[in-house]
View (cartoon, helix red, strand yellow):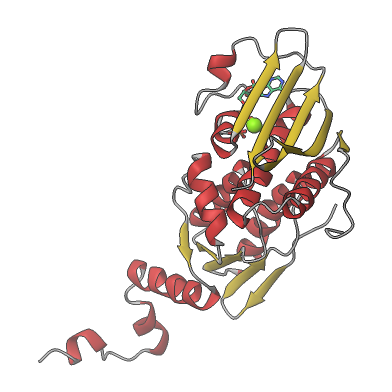
Length: 139
Length: 141
Ligand SMILES: Nc1ncnc2c1ncn2[C@@H]1O[C@H](COP(=O)(O)OP(=O)(O)OP(=O)(O)O)[C@@H](O)[C@H]1O
Ligand SMILES: [Mg+2]
């Protein structure tokens, strides 16, 4: 599985169910291994992906991810884009605060995921859905 | 939905998580475990996460809930086998596994369960075997 993955093209995965969140974790792991991220960096990226995929399902009402390898000329990395067309996030600063939740969670998913990756970009707004891009670079 | 098996080994329930659990599977495990604690009267639960390559906020919360639930049901839970990369990631995620006892491996976990039990009920042994020789008093100089 790992050996066979094509790193030259992005891989898509829908997020419509619990089982899809598991599939996202497995896809991200496969690409991270192939892109030669260290074990700790793989673990961080998969954990962040798990949090963001669950948010896409629970708050975004489902959506999808695209996992790809990227190259900035100096380093290779793994980029993941999470997208949903749900309600969006009204107050982003609040949502990124440790412990803030509207769903009875721990409120660590978004803020924790941001700490676990190297680049974190979020595009959201009321009524326009949520699109989160993260990158983890190989060291 | 897949289900995580729960084994009874002597007086202890052993859960060895071998698959990447969906959130539903994790919730089911929580329920199954509570039922088995009551059904068996076991006072110790060991959750072996050696095979887990990540612990996210959902699974972390499940482990905390299991520890609290088992406490209420008079059982001690010990989580064993956390991988170093998982521990590093958990700390950065900001998850403190509050109230969770951890040990390096199943063997150490079993010792911890036994110790916790002995601390809480120091006279259990005496009652069980009816002897009155307390090792602590006989070994004093
Ligand atoms: N894709 C999304 N669409 C809409 N709202 C979102 C989305 N992702 C996160 N949010 C909002 O941001 C809040 C914080 O998210 P975060 O993942 O940090 O915490 P949580 O999911 O509530 O709890 P945890 O992830 O710790 O179990 C959520 O409660 C929700 O209100
Ligand atoms: Mg979340």
